[in-house]
Image (cartoon, rainbow, N blue to C red; front, side, top):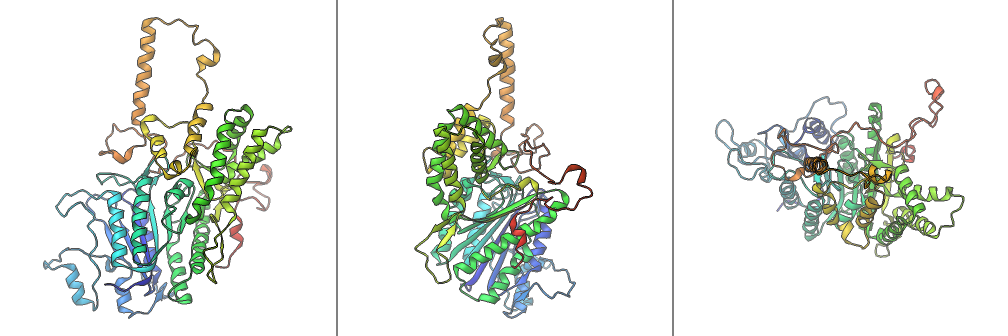
Length: 567
């Protein structure tokens, strides 16, 4: 039985797509962080090139052995040597030129070398075997890390493509038989992992999603009984934007500072610092014109939002039947912070904009509108107010905690973000995409009635504009011949059938490279979109004629966290 360490830090780099080339630099950053004997750092990397196997690394494995239990954090600052990951790869039954197992040769050459055998990345060992599905692959890897690298505390970082809420396409792998994970899949896998961790008396502290648009209420509700904290972005998350070397060095330094058996408050402070490092590192992407955001959420407090959210949904549903309220809901939706082609809206900012628009009315005596503003206030307070937790009275652990512990942004496109979004597109997704059917199965939709799902269904119906013929009032007055009606019907059927190919159901496709496969502009695998936003957000607050010469005072939008530099 392997020794139980203080930390096992798990990195699942799902890069069997064009991300793979960029992820190599992330692997090297993890390696360059050095090591601490009380921290296991285990990485799975799935390359893109067909035939190249999935790799699992025990980072700095041989360096740890040769350093005889002493830490080496960040290696020597004046040592220019570039370290690779060949020594860290875990081998199964691969053979050398002399037909010896690579493992056996390493055992002979390196004293005390005896790492565990990693899981197979394919369905079987036969030549040409298909890769495991993302679900099976992630499940095998998490079980392997828990079984073979026991620790008191676990962190899991998942990097990969996909927009999971609504689309249900996450960690897309075109070489696997089943190409992607759904949100329900993620919940089931991480609950199983959490139970396995708890069974050994340990705790799952932090779940980091280095992926686009994961910081949402739907994800928080689905994972509320898994990790204590979740670190994720509402908008775009770029490869390279998470500084893994500095993040690991932070954890290693805290192991030196605090030793074994870290307290809950110390772990919370580590999580907060990791969020700071990510947003500080991401500011350099502003040089390329890209904004970014990050949020640290207390998943264990997701339930505290339920009463306020249910009241908001009830008042929104009633408001859609009132002309004034419905117009203000649409206006708040338009004005509020949105992400990924207007699919997601920051819940805090939506409520804030709705209250703000209500206050602008000269006559705000509409009772329903007052109820709606009060419900929005409740949600705002529930998202960021401190929650009493009388069961946690450790000397170092505050009994007051918040659902959104900290959130930060860099750049104009994310300047109104407050950390957590909800799925809120402008129009109803195609029936053939199964988006709404999938959404109805989320815990976020099942826990309460009415739910946000109910609001979306009514919103799509009540805000739908009538056809042009109906608006003109001439739809019934034009008498069509049977031939004209048949032509109209055939054209309508052709359009309806073409929408079968604009679905988001890539998870079930067996040949995504088929040239006949049509894809929607809303790329479900998280690809870039250069379509213009409907938002009119301020980018430079100086007068236009002064922008080239005037000082940059208040010109760029940055969250307050950029003024706290002590880490």
